[in-house]
Image 1 (cartoon, rainbow, N blue to C red):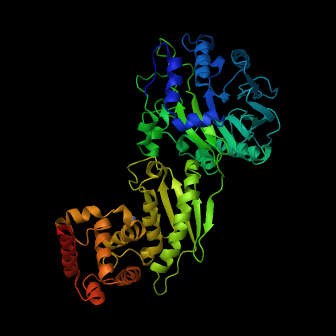
Image 2: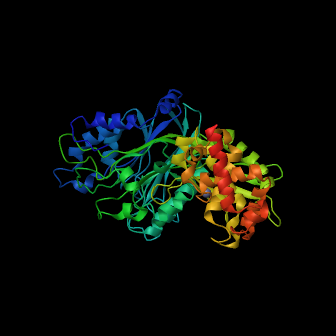
Image 3: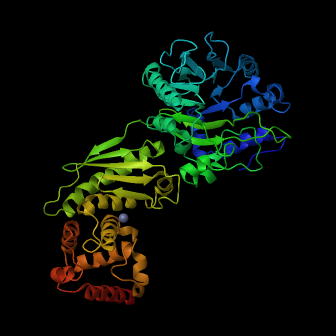
Length: 544
Ligand SMILES: [Zn+2]
């Protein structure tokens, strides 16, 4: 989606944003639940007085039109001087504005005001405090900050949903990393207090890159809305444009294909900085996310030296806490859906009950001498932005007893392979084969993966016929081809020699498996003989 030069940029920006929304979004919108939240550093008016191109009077109408087109329900602006505040209030009469200037007189200096729709929200509480050791002392600064830095906030009751939430807006110090980190943690702490634990939307120009300490500290508590977005986030990656026009902006999708440091720093100072954020509390759904790199009509100029970012969110859509169930006589199962609130319902209705049933079954099926089944297993949905880093839809870490599930893959496969995939990974947790260290001789990969796929395709979902392709072209396969081929072979062996799979699991777990001896000792035949029998059986069935 590229940035718009046309005179009709206002309409385009809005049309593109709406185009990103799924039909589900429209359904929800009818219920009045989602709201658009925005962050926008509008560049202080005193900064560009001598610039014919970028001075406030020249750009403000276009900026106002852009904001209007994005149509936020709540917006946090930064670098707003009193003259700009006055102009914004006149331009947007449907919004109430709150927030003071950062100087000791509370009037002057840059402000970070919040604008919210008067017809939709009822203010419960609002104010401004300083990011310092004495937050209630106007004009105060700490932690080597270059300027006094503030947070303006509003606790709002959404008339559409009856839900209350806190919206906080800040512009952290550009010089001191300590001030950025401590300032933002102070904001989060105070929001928790002021909102009585209600969900939080925390926006602003945070002057830091996503892998730097302050952003990392915030991301431990709140969620970056861009990563939560249920539709691919759209628009420009950089939010700070340095007044430097680009024919083609790097899109969020392009940036996310690069490693985190590269996407954050490549191209030099003006090229790739994403420093403006929208954070939300866990449990918030994000239906869409966009950074709007629109130019001013008929020019190569931007309305500000930052781009606005907008997220469409549903506050308090799901519980913030992980879902958990105790499998009878087996493990406690914890499901962390904080990176995928939209998968919460599927987790509660289908995923958790299935795992609950199968962890009990596998505790029995996979028992072996001296083996202790896990007491707790964590299933965690993860956002894996760098596609090349991990190609698998899910992966198990048996040491941590944790299964990671890729949000994007699961969203697309709920009615397909999703459940079966989790059974395969659950099997790995139960196998715990590597607790004695990697051993490729006595615990070969083909047997480990073949066994996990045997549990999945032969026992869990035989009706899916996931190994069917093996039958159709049996000549080219071997018993140790791993995954489904080996699973099919294991299914054959178990049907002819019941109990073999229990012994195989025990041998792999104890690292006593010897491919040259195991099959002979358990079935009286070598692996090669068994393979011949397996192929003959399939061939015979096919011929019939
Ligand atoms: Zn596997």
